[in-house]
Length: 295
Image 1 (cartoon, rainbow, N blue to C red):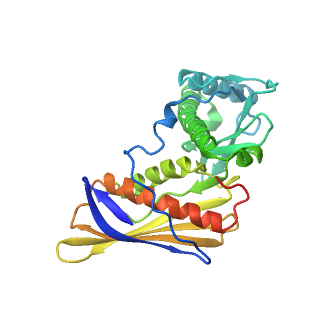
Image 2 (spheres, rainbow, N blue to C red):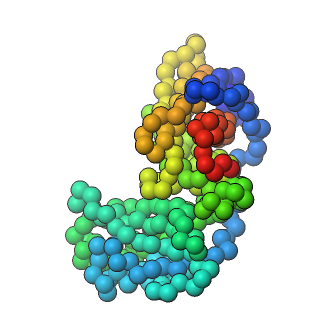
């Protein structure tokens, strides 16, 4: 394993800790961006928004929210409409909401034309009182935020389907992985590592989502940065892969040393290279677990 930092490769170690693991492939480096080139291609489906009956809103406000969501999706070049009767080839978007600790979290679940779940995401939480009042400005803001999350999920599904096998598509779509935010990294490391891992897992044929609903596997990481050799910091990243029932399946461990203080602000190429190489290990752990639909 090696990290890359400011165009400079640094030697390191990548270990796969899982029962019966095979040798770990070493994916070649590419240009930064991961799956980004594919994510600019619009998904060639129309999205039917079913009237949200479980969105914790009165009927009139629920329909207003659905209309605002469809309008926001259309503005982002995603064909969408509100309908009680989807056309035979329409994909479905089901909107619900959950009350958690005085806040309402909108949830968006996407299914294909056969009704098979493809992925799910959540919008930012909204104070319960503001949501219940259903004021236009509140619903319009939630709709715009929701449209951003749904659009990104659709593009992720498309990229994963482009990399998945025909068997995986026939089984209902690519396998879904819940990616939890990375923890423990200084600077922007948590966000950077999470974003890059999302890109590379998508490129390997997985639908990466935030909620647990429908996901067969979960991935997260813990980072420790401490003193190493003179004028060096020792970086350890453990990518933890678990099953739906919570059983840990294996870990991809990355250990390296970088110039002291390099990662206190921006991770940049280090996050890109670390996630690129770790994604292959995560895929190997999932394969060793016997995923029913392998990319």
